Length: 247
Image 1: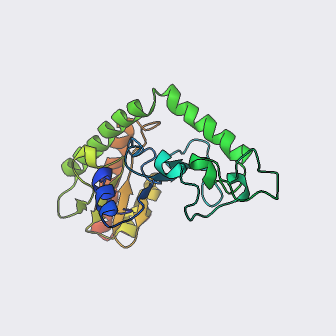
Image 2: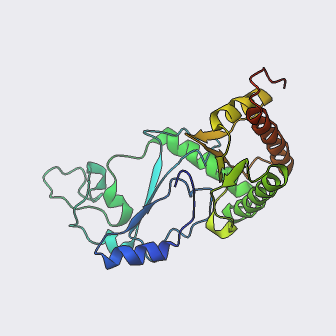
């Protein structure tokens, strides 16, 4: 997933899992802003997501950061399934009565291990309000599709097939904001040249670079400038140019 980032049909995955007797759920780490997801609410029994780098306005991320969990009502009403449980998942009516047996809340509340952290939640609320001001997730997704398609077009126009291969699906409905690019030259060196040119691109060793324009604050001009810098960095690497690059 880190390399290809393909958006799979959730229903098909669920169908196969249930056929094998599995309890099906999914993680929403990289789909948060990359794609608009209907939360699998009709098929999946749980969906977990953490406020990852894609909600990258004001949110602290990493271990201990705010997260979310959707639990389908079909699972939320079963109170005796094996689960990793905590005090704050206990029914609110008996939560502070230590003599009561385990009686979890219905839904996602029964899976809570602790109270909601105030500061990360406040930051999350502030970040989500920015998405609202931008027109909501649907509007952000529409712009994201165009930005990524533009980046893909420019890559094909500015570079040759001998220099790169795009691993991410060409179908815009099967991908998010990111293009995973398999480099035919050394990706680490390309990244160093890019940094000297004033741009930063994520690298996954040994040879994949991840290009992801962010719809909230990247423009089409930003994409054009980046691809031109990317082209220059690739050519410098191909020519074994180790000199300092002027910005």
